[in-house]
Amino acid sequence: MRAKKVSNLGTNTLKDDKQVYKHFYFVDWPILNEEKRNLLPKISWIVDQQRPGEPTWMEGSTLRTSLSNMSRTCFRVRPWFEPGVWGGQWMKDNFKGLNQNVPNYAWSFEMIVPENGLVFEDNGNLLEVSFDMLMFQEYQNVLGKAANRFKFEFPIRFDFLDTFQGGIFQYSVILNQII
Image (tube, rainbow, N blue to C red; front, side, top):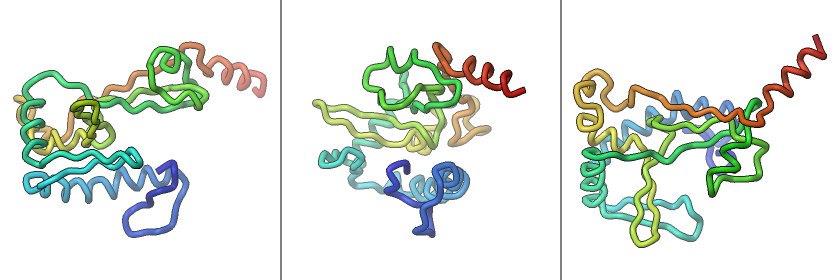
């Protein structure tokens, strides 16, 4: 989205990032997720093309078996990191592999069904599917007694905030000077 490589369903017009994301969240994802949920049991092959020039793939039956196995053990989704006005430096300094070309990181979003991914690794090859694929197939195993209540949604949202050496103090000082 930020690379301006994709637009919302039904339009070729690129909007600002915030509008595109809201449209994804409330329109595109619900429509596409219904289709993805219906296709999951029928997939012959799944291909991850998010790394240019390095596509990875997996047989659909292997994916479904892997999701089933994952639902019966501990797992962690791939976190999503985002800068923000109060963001700090702790995540940048302590998490290897994070983009250093941002001013800070304010959030680490985890366990958000449409936004986080699950990464499978085999012999150094990485293949990522969305967290919702696990929930579509295995929500009963993941949620247990709460499965009928929440279905494909994970009921708890984890947001870790980084304010170490963050900008909130700087912004509050500027605000006080204006007032």
